[in-house]
Image 1: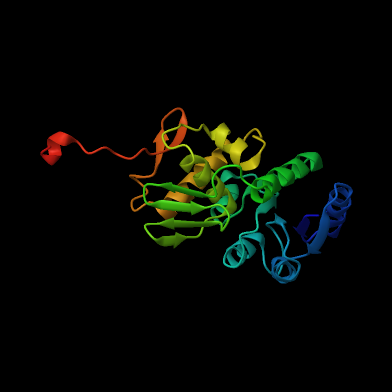
Image 2: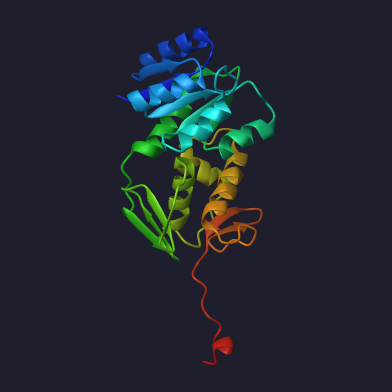
Length: 236
């Protein structure tokens, strides 16, 4: 049974989510603000966090900053803010998805199941992927670039694993949404661009001129194939 931590300062909303989530077979724990949520997360070790942004004591953004330093547990943000900049900031701080209030509970549950499938199911692909000088270990959930360990969010890890498993293959944003989330919801394609930008900032020496993750304009993204030296430039 998966444990879901619901973090929101509205008791009525927490009660409603508890009711629906327990009917779906989840174990639910709660917190009314970010500070309490950090304590509950440390004790209960949830499999996923549903997080409101606007709360007293410690808001959602502050929680994300602190939580990302001690856990890779996936987070779905609930927000009444509709500006793209607010949603993008949440993703940049480590959230895996966002749902705008008011929301459809069935869609939220579908998103929860999609994120849990991606983070919990045993991969069919090789446990260790190697491409260029990157080594990705699915079992250990680690990534090394040139021998240096890199911390990635669950979504960043899933995107990198998808691209590395098929170097040279172009994946559209919808392809990556499907691989990462299991369900490509309308209006969510832009989240892939944010995750790619964050991923490049972590693994690329020069994110503006990426060596590993290439943009194929009008199509999507791919992991670069190894470059073959030009014989005319090597004297061969």
